[in-house]
Image (cartoon, rainbow over all chains, first blue to last red):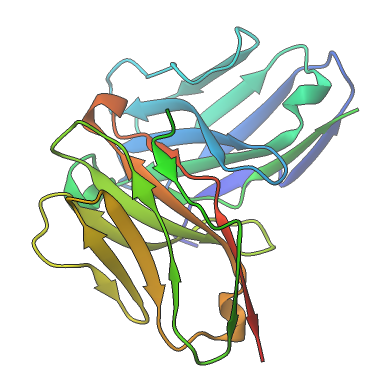
Length: 116
Length: 115
C-alpha cells in the first residue's frame, strides 16, 4: 500500500494512562500533519512537521500532548495522562510539499481512541 | 471568526442529479489553497479537488468541479450525476500561508443520495 498508514486502528485505554499513536506517511512526502476529530465534528489541527524545520505545535491542546518525527519518516503522537475528553479519532496526513497542488494532504485511516 | 463556513448541515439529492455543496471562506492572504474532502461512514478522509487562489480556471476532477468565485470568497463543490456511493460527509478546507500549510476545516455537509 502506498497510502498513509496509522496504528493502532482502535485504542481503548483507562483515564490517566499514556497512549502512543503512530503514523507512517507516504514515502517521499516531506510534510506530516496530525489532526483530531471529535464525534460529529470537523477536524482540529494539532501539529505539523515539515522536513527538518521546527514543528508547528500551535494546535496542541495541552502539554499532555506531544509528537515526534524522525527525518521524513514515521511520526508518533503521545498523549500523557489521558482524559475522557481526549476520546476522538486522531488523523494523520502527509503532503509532498507545501506549494500549490503539492500541498494536497492525503489522510490515513485514523486511530479511534476511547478513554474510559 | 470562522475561516470556513459550510451553511448546509445536510443535503438530499436523487441519484443521477447534480448537487452543489456551499463553502465560503475568510482570509486576507492573497495566496491560499482550497480543498474538498469526502468522509464516508468508514471514517477515512478522501481528497477530492484542489483550487489555488491564483488559478484562472475552476478545478475539475471527473464528476467533481469547484465553482470558485474569488470576489465572493466562495468555493462551492458541484457533484454531477450523483451516485449512491456519494453519500458521505463533505468538508471544505483552506490552507493559508500564515497557517504553515495546515488546513482549516469547515463543519461539513452530510450528503445523502437516494435511489
